[in-house]
Image (cartoon, rainbow, N blue to C red):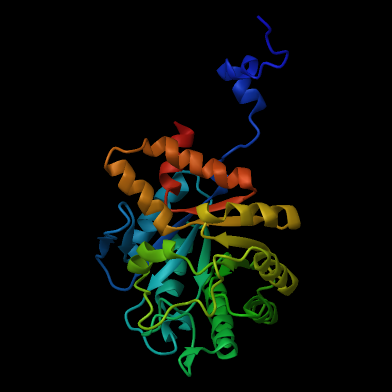
Length: 324
């Protein structure tokens, strides 16, 4: 019998060797945990489509932020559910808006935790779109002015980083200018540079109460069929001053993550979105998959594709699994 000269199983056969040659590493330092802050008090409402994820008033947000910090997760990203919504998303850039007050509370009680804020208007508008509506569509330039105000208000409240998710043209440059001109040149911008018009966002829209009241977001979010456009979008945001770029969603767009990793040297984030989370949770609840194994494999997939940072609703579970 002729045996092969190359025997890969010599290394695979022992755990110590597998550890020694492992190409991709996952760390708790890679994780960012999303949180939904709701106006009011005594609120802790589980999102029906996202088991384990809650809309919470500020006192519960602070308590969970403390837990997140104790797990070693370095950062959270905040989304807001305001008391009132209007056509121009006023609460998004109000001095005492829900996110501004949440930032202050977290930084007061858990100062070592980095607070990143989502910068968009969809959670604050009564029509659910990401900007000002004119002639049945989002007015790009009018919206950019408000996004810059929103980002500045977050920085003034104590945010450590701002993350525009709206996909308006030119918003990174406008936000960078607003920050720089007002004494916040040290605040980084993590741009949702490549954000697709995806069906995977459904559960998030329940969590953030941000479902569009008419139409959809395809006039400003990217076509899922496009690959080269992602490179153009990312480069535009880099040229405008983004410090970190992001791909959203994650799993269906790992080719895009790899393309961007190959094309640029900026830190690269990926958003493991609500639909991806909910599918795993549903399959695990039915006993169809091993949840821990599948979640950790998913996280490694993001890292292997080239992501430096992972925004994920699994972050607390991953942190516990990594430290046990």
